[in-house]
Amino acid sequence: MTVRHPAGPQPGAGSPGSKVSQRREDYFPIHPRTILPGTAGLFDLYLKRGDWFVLYAKKGEHFTIEPKLKDLLDVSEFYIRVDQRFDYETYLARNLGNMLLNDQLPMEERSKLFYQISSGMLKQSFASKLPRGLDDKTYQAMQLLVKRGIALLSKEESLKSLSEFLSHKYHTYSHSLNVMVLTISVLQSLSGMDQTTLFEAGLGAALHDIGKTQIPDEVINKSGPLNQAEWEMMKTHPVRALGICASMPISHVATNAILFHHERFDGAGYPGGIGGEGIPVYARVLSLCDVYDALTSERPYAKALAPYKALSIMQEDMKGAFDPALFKRLVYVLGNARIV
Image (cartoon, rainbow, N blue to C red):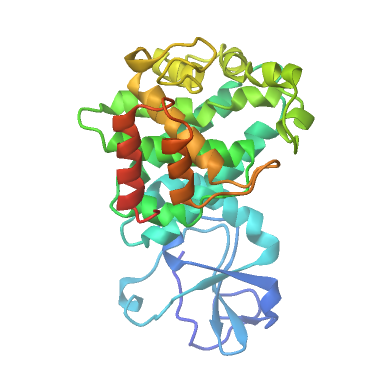
């Protein structure tokens, strides 16, 4: 469809250029670069002109902009009706890959879109108890999420921008996304890390706590210390995760990342009690990122710590738990992103 300049004559209601309700609460703003030329969405686009919202583009048709109008329009925001929010979010999810690669869209906006859409997908996936294991549709969505994360995090300043949106209210799904972001960032900083291993390790990070969907909520969300029976149950979640993923063609890298993320460098972890370089490097990185995000998140039994405090505890109170060289690498990555 051809977008018309809204300042022209006002046609009848429902056509581009029409004035409609001036109730601001009926609309929400979006960044104009989230609308990709050549795509179509089941929502209308509006501009705000004074006290009025003016129809700019109709739903259901391809969005295009005439070149001669590009310099005439000073558009800082589009608006969409609140009752069409779901249609807009569906459009975003479908076109997110292209948006993340769009360098004309500010990194802050790309990071926000990635985090909102990815956390929504993980929330839906982790909401069920997955009694029959991971289904193919969810597994493919997880793979796409990781690929998008790698693409975004390869951009300069991306982790700094993403850190503004990382949730510090602990939920299994948000924790999994945060850990995936941090794991990918640290692994990308290591020399010699090939793209296949990076992707598979990122997938393992996204899935590392999915075994908790088979543990009762009263154990996961308990505000006090776990008793022995509850702790033994909690320690089964890496193995449970592998059972959930068993029907999918998950690689040995992703499998090891999931299974070993609670192993300690000194061999005092679980489920296998392996240590040192017997733990694959990507699992050692995942272990670091897992603990760091947990400490900096508000959990039922503990308040969120500041990044520097969390790192101090990891270094001083958890001696032997982590690979010292990789701990320094995590600090470097966080510092480079100006998180600490």
